[in-house]
Length: 145
Image (cartoon, rainbow, N blue to C red; front, side, top):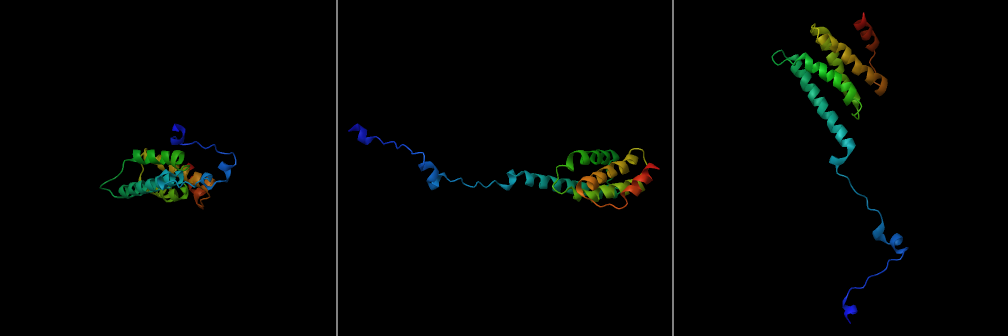
């Protein structure tokens, strides 16, 4: 009689597991925070915000940004950021602004490399991401001569 009080165990048949509705795969929703695409988008947005701030502070004379910071950013972006952004064309304005601001306002030896670094980023955007920049080669030639 003790066996009657104990719960009985069922043996599952091999076909029962494939035909019952309980074994259907459930669609798992991944939160947006855990999606790689969302991280890339947020990282790109953060970079664009930082670059906008960098350009706005460089244009005002009271809070000028060090040329070394511009050099570091212009070196870092093509090597590490362009390849991770879902839409790297959004960086074209920064590279163009950095090129024009550096080539027209600064003449120090530290900032003389800024046009070349900016054109490096523009070149990657042109060749790998379809950016159209009609004066690119003329400006490059002007830097070299």
